Image (tube, rainbow, N blue to C red; front, side, top):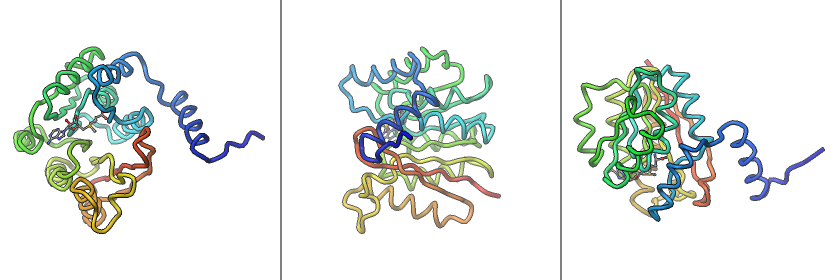
Length: 226
Ligand SMILES: C[S@@+](CC[C@H](N)C(=O)[O-])C[C@H]1O[C@@H](n2cnc3c(N)ncnc32)[C@H](O)[C@@H]1O
């Protein structure tokens, strides 16, 4: 019997093997990451297995419209938009014009320009303009963590029963569990977590995730109930 030791090496091995089988990156996804690396920017994108999980979730809730807050170079946007039908729509919000440009290029390379749109600006300025495009079947929150509670307010306004609201980086290597949290981002995440747990219309779960060298993190998934 081949037993894998559950040390760091063992976890990396399992992750690699699962990624290779369930969520292999193609050239388009690799090119999106390469753009980040070429710009000497930090690689903050979701992992391939997260991307595949989000696709499975999008298909499960029959997502036609997805809202993403925090596009960066379009890596998660590609995973999400690929789960949409031809007449589906991903709207992704990004404050940094350089990242927005990279995201547009990545989505165009992926042949997803018709289905995915990047809007440039601070999410809190852009969100009030999206009312006519709601409801969204899925919202992915992955921007400035300090504003997560505001993003939750908008997500609740813009979703329907059965929609999913996902938030990345809700552990922050444990900083989000400290009382009081040691920084503003962790405070935002802690407040977000408390609210999704207490909200009567949300059923939520969170999973731990090893954030590619940035330490242990995690993400939450909430479903909006009737
Ligand atoms: C963690 S990265 C997103 C990674 C991306 N979701 C992925 O997995 O490929 C966070 C992004 O949010 C953007 N951002 C930060 N504050 C923002 C704000 N107030 N409004 C919109 N985007 C913001 C950052 O510029 C950055 O590109």
